[in-house]
Image (cartoon, rainbow, N blue to C red; front, top):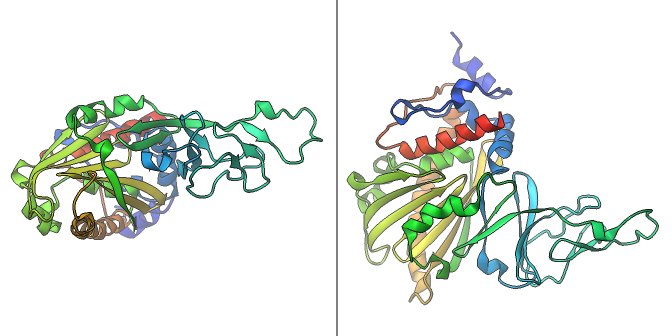
Length: 369
């Protein structure tokens, strides 16, 4: 029998994927993913290759890219990207890597750039990625400026949100089709951005999403939220590329009022929280093994009266729930890394959203393997 100290040491060593752990599992017999998928350098790199290199990810807001030359920087799966609005009005996701010696074309978000100039050696590119000039390269034999351009990723603008993908497995419209159908005519694209927050969390990105995907824990760690939601009517629906949690919502008019809470997970790491007359978007970003960042953007309809006061109430409550989740996710991460944990059975009634996520993960790991 292997003792827990030996198991703990093994968690820190490279672990090969066991094919049995990535085989499909029916919900009624399903277990969670084993702990080694949540810890270590190998797991972090596996997720980059198998998941983030192929998934559509929330990257920016459309209002950040409204005019020619407006740009936003970030990365997907370790590839630096620069989303920019071109002179022709097109939105492009250019690799933010100069074709000379890999310098950056932009180091921060910006507005109204006329061209993209490498910060390392000054090579200059048009907003569509074509190389325009290369400083002091006149003596380079057979050097053809016209043949050089920045590689492009894929980009999609959806209801005021901009998504990007390096090598997507499916078209963006297919990913969002059923979300669009459920949202119908809700004017989310007309909602105005109000405030941004970041949370850096000492847990694997998947541990955070696991927690988001079920209401099973709500009565136990979120007493304030539990008083607003109807746990008996808390439903999780799953589709090919997303899942939806929804529940009747009853709260003070100064907070959310009455209505319905809709919580969408969109593969692989986008969360959309649609509440009465407001929306939050979350992006869950892996930072390093056992660490992630969750971004929160708040949106409201145009012309909301006393918006700062309303947002203060929103954020105070949301931040309370978030801190409760963070505390538990960090404890769970330590448990996953302890060597003590063996994959437990999932609750078919309350954890079908977690099962759906784990089946997508298993599918991606099988394809990569």
